Length: 317
Figure 1: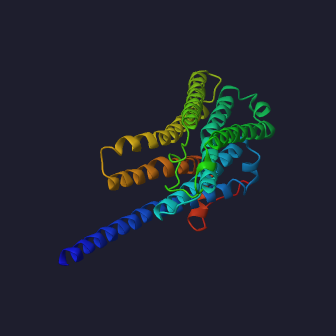
Figure 2 (figure 1 turned 60 degrees about the horizontal axis):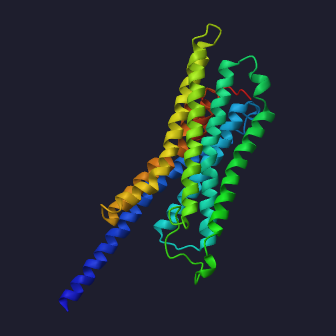
Figure 3 (figure 1 turned 45 degrees about the vertical axis):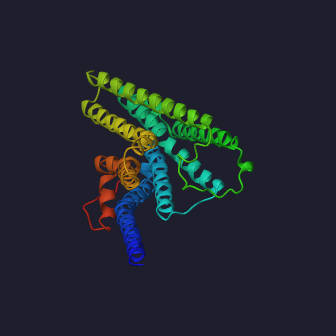
């Protein structure tokens, strides 16, 4: 009888420790996520608060990038809360969440390509920049980016529908919803890897080519040295953003490989660390980069983040 009580006590202690650890990790993740969401929403508001931001192509592209990253961050946090609370979803609900995440996730690298090309034209063809990069062409580029991402999601849904859901006794999932769990067919897995590889290789080549073109133009006597230097730094940051976004694609294979070596608790801790540095941080990098480096945005961002303290800011709108 005493052994049974001791066993029950140990189970209760282990459950309590597990619950306490989940709560602590949830706080560790939720607090920075809320901070970054506040910064992103502030940046989105700023980019719609002044005429100069609404009529410049680079800021319109930045708004599109921030919007996609913010939605992705919200979806990631929602998925984390669902997982932490051990909530089992139905297949249709899980598919909707995963497809929305896939849609917004692919927007970032494609938008980075367009932003890099815009900076390349600004430095290498300054006299033609106003005629090439117009509001119309910028809107068309954004629509093309969303169309490509939407087509990708449509193909994924078609591949998922090939799974015999009608043979299941219930549409209620027996596992927690995640992108890894939704790899229900080999064809879907092959397509996911092929598309991801194609997008990031293409995006990487486009950004690197733009960087090389800017560096070559910087040696020309007719080129603004300061503008070329700032653009080359921006393109380097875009490459870093692309690399961080690409790192999220190795998340599932790495977790699968590590799961055979370490215990389940260690895997959960690794997943949480990856979630912070691979999913959360890259979605906030754009706000930090442009919010701090851009001379038009920085005073406004400081104004709103400092609870509207009276700063020496002269409105340019």
